[in-house]
Length: 120
Length: 112
Image (cartoon, rainbow over all chains, first blue to last red; front, side, top):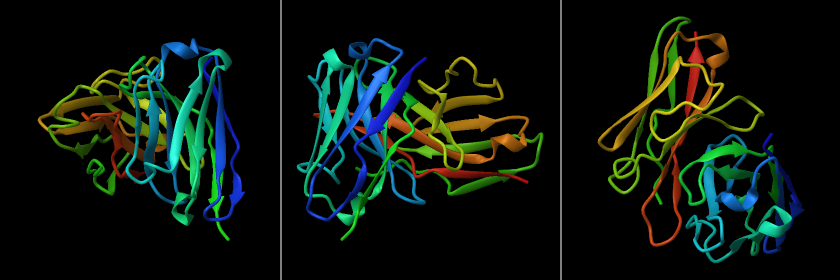
């Protein structure tokens, strides 16, 4: 059974940093691309960032480019999102998501999310 | 990075069929067969319903079907049931110099 467990969310002041982690199990982690997707309260889904199986291809939404960094550790079956210079508008539930392929082709499994609140 | 365009809401009575559209461009929906559809109930994580335009994952009811014509993809739900009431999102791979994925704004399905 595929399991994705996010951690690292919390309340943080604007301008500060936070690092999200995602522990994956139930599948061969280094065979698949991975993503971070967020959902602001009462809003729709927004793709944040993605990374292919070997970290050779990475992408970011314009809204986070230059501030967020995605990475993965295939030896630890883990995905990360380093979030710097956080803004109030980054407040959202952040989902870790697995792609169905080694290069990004479509998300097939989602974690339960970790809540990030940016507020002074 | 404009989102894919979906209607804000659709509704139907039990037993009826509804269709949700998802309009993009030739750089995403129209250019690739990597369109997915997700169902999200309140307070829950999204669930994959359709992948690669028209394929259903194991365990998803055959009342759900997907198609594409040009730059517009569609999700059809036949034989509407009360439990189908949820938010639905489309998503597509998008051509870019880096990795790029785009979601639709979401459609609220109400079963009357």
